[in-house]
Image (cartoon, rainbow, N blue to C red; front, side, top):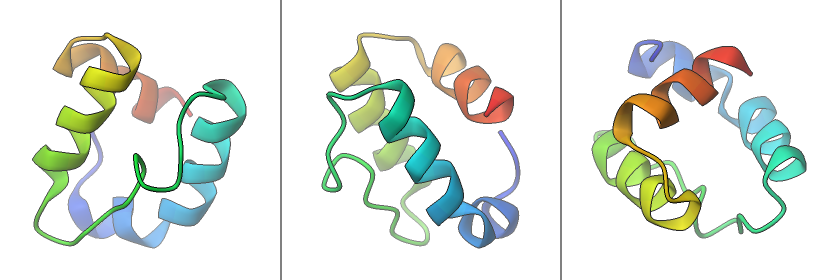
Length: 62
């Protein structure tokens, strides 16, 4: 996954693309709090039923 600074800077765009691709995601699922990237990844793992590595790949590919 990109570093936290880049992720934070592009988060609104990335969040919109994730919501388009995975309609079941809500704003609460995609809440990015600085310093809690692992918590965000954990929420996405639970919601999408994917591994941590798969979540990182999805975010890199978008």
